[in-house]
Length: 116
Image (cartoon, rainbow, N blue to C red; front, side, top):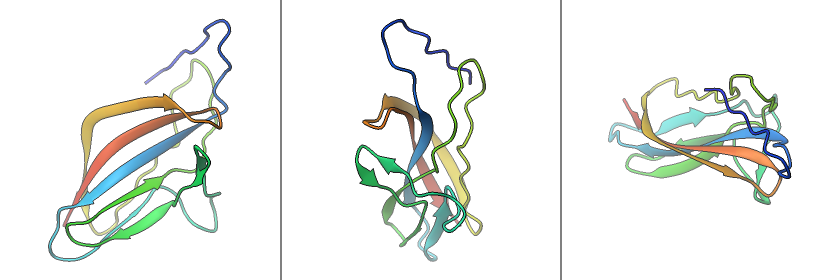
């Protein structure tokens, strides 16, 4: 996906953050999901709230994780959306919500289902 936001009078985005709302549909055990690596990546602040890079979600439960802030450049492919669930299959929902955070980031929101 290429996004061009060169609109006169609107400040440029300062970065990109991917936000994942994860539902664990497996009854066999918890789902471990990560959009970054604690200790390596900086935990993002989104709309004034510090967001986790990873979570362990109980069977039937839900959780929200965010990616580290990625660099935003005009007319280049959007990156930084790494999502890992080593012991689960993950399915991304079709809907994508784009918004601007109070920090000036482009926020890309997706729903994710984790299964074993």
